[in-house]
Length: 82
Image (cartoon, rainbow, N blue to C red; front, side, top):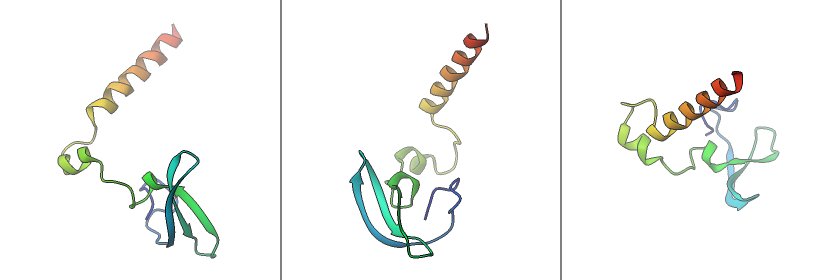
């Protein structure tokens, strides 16, 4: 299964193999037409569970490090407008 924001969300595919290619872990599968395709493993349910997500159990929408990074991006955009 793919990431919730991916257009293929909710579909199931025939798994072929997971391996490291192009400097990232990828999952290879056959699509509904029988064509072999691949996606980054992190975009699928074959990815490792994020420890924060498991511990937060739905109680927190954001990780602290993501909010800090977002604040930096916003600061950079505001500085670019001056």
